[in-house]
Image 1 (spheres, rainbow, N blue to C red):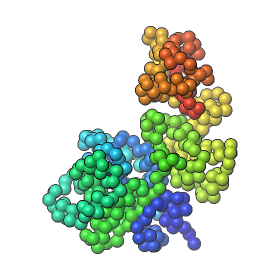
Image 2 (cartoon, rainbow, N blue to C red; image 1 turned 45 degrees about the horizontal axis):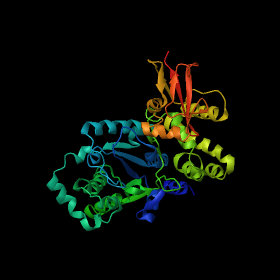
Image 3 (cartoon, rainbow, N blue to C red; image 1 turned 60 degrees about the vertical axis):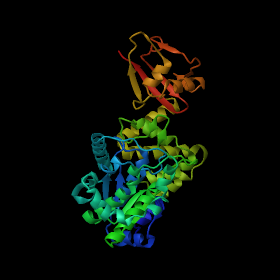
Image 4 (cartoon, rainbow, N blue to C red; image 1 turned 30 degrees about the vertical axis):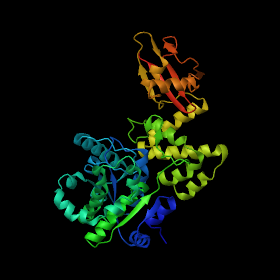
Length: 408
């Protein structure tokens, strides 16, 4: 018997929690399902953290189901408190609109929105024009404050103080599901596991208010073995925008993940058949590096295209194999108007260190090499003599490289 989309997600390890599991399994087996995933426009690019949900959306579309990508032009005005110790930064309407448009462009690389195969909408279309009293009467009456306060999405905020602004977030997200159900026949909401409480709110609202079937499903959050969210580096998030995280840096991030996570990432973040995923995940010792290269190549190919993935793979092999440098290593061009630059300033300029104190710490701990020579002096100054070949290669730690060219 042919696998259903639910079976595919289950086999690849996506599904963490699901409401009405038997009904959801039957739904995917017997019907074309319209489902949605929300993306709050908190930055001008999607991140590696979004990528699990994007891949789930792509798998479901390939199996014949219809995704709705919901841009959070309205909910971003409030800010989701889920998993946050502090209130999110308030963005202007213009910033949110710009971010939402960037998300629209990026999602179109992974999801086919032509011929009604998928829908992309913005919840600003209905949330920004709500009448407060009417909304409270229509929707607010269906939510118990006592029950809301026990939700995981609010727990981490209760000690520091949860604002009434953020307290409304669950109700607004639930209302989104109701609107999408009425407008597009959307019966399933998907999201990361941290969205479980918010998703339950929408499922129950539709069932109570309109007496119609509605379901929710959450996906595994990618974490390290210590439980820290993956997709973060010393310099911040791993972005899907090549201008914010270069294809080479993106490749290197996945090439360098811990051994224990290779199989999980291959299953969740690539389209490789599970037989191949299991074979690669079973590799041990030095051979696991081959699996990591496959993982990094496949993810980079999906996000940045096959050409960029090949360039990043060649650059990685050149650097770690001692061969000639390929052109995909992150590169900066600098001028030396005074004929010199101190190393810490150069680390800041190349974004190898976020602050001067962090640059100083890296040098003190022996974490910086220039053309494979470890730097000993914290106050080292580079002169034209250091750039005699027209360039230098800075190495941070064991795996981060940055090429610095001298402006002609």
